[in-house]
Structures are given as structure tokens and as C-alpha cells.
Image 1: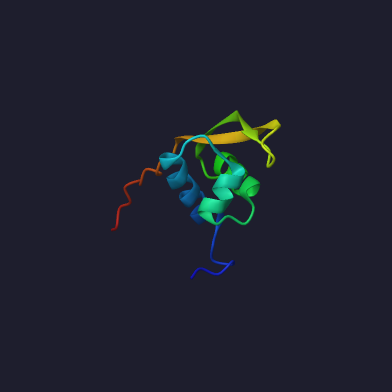
Image 2: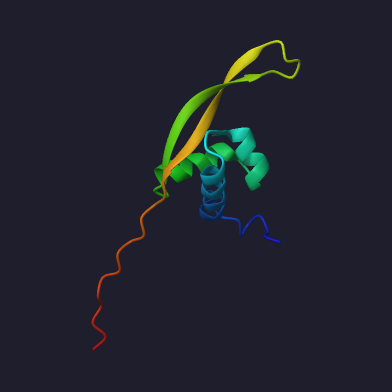
Length: 93
């Protein structure tokens, strides 16, 4: 089991990216439930701004609990994963 101090944004972002590969156009609530995120908005923000993931945002209509009214919810899709940094040749003399 991973403790809260060991579950970094990078580890959470990897779980989100794997989920979005299988289920594109997911909502933040779906991501939080499937990927065990502490705060989905912080992880999604870090993915796009700090970690180099490409995210596409959209909208989807969902029905409220009673099923009589609809509302817009934000959806997220993964466009690309971050590229690995190229290793520079280092002389070991």
C-alpha cells in the first residue's frame, strides 16, 4: 500500500494517463473514482503545466440524479505523453 506521502503527482498522472488511454473523454469525477486521486483538479493541472502531458478538454451533457435535468461537465482526453529527455553522451575518462 502506498502512503499519502509517497503518492506523488507523477505517479497519479501516470494512472490518469493510463485510464484516459482506455477511456477518453472522462470527467474529473470518473478520474477520481478510477485512479484514486486526492484532488483531480490539481493532478490534471500538474499534468498539463508541469509534467508535459498533452490534454484536450471538452464538454459533455450528463443527467442529474433525478434524471429530469441536464448539465454540462468538463471532460478530459490525453493527446500525448511527455517525451523522455535525451541522454547526452558523457565521457567517463
